[in-house]
Image 1 (cartoon, rainbow, N blue to C red):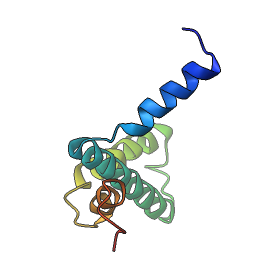
Image 2: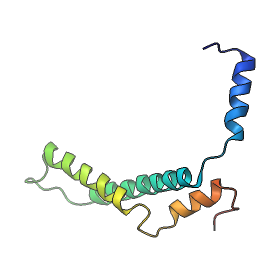
Image 3: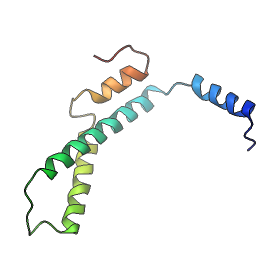
Length: 97
């Protein structure tokens, strides 16, 4: 592919004109909400006291996978409003309130 300035400008203008679909925005919003919930779960688990029986790397890895799955499952169903705010913000529906 030839990367000249004119090609780059035409590519940028073509991508700037396309808007994501409502389904893509919803998926992105739920992904952002999932990421937020994952960070929240990870922070909460970090605050727990350590345990010698469950302090191994395998258990820690399993708990991280559990937190990730819980965050994915809860995204969009937790009614936090993060996904809806992302959709409103990027769909041109005004400022998220």
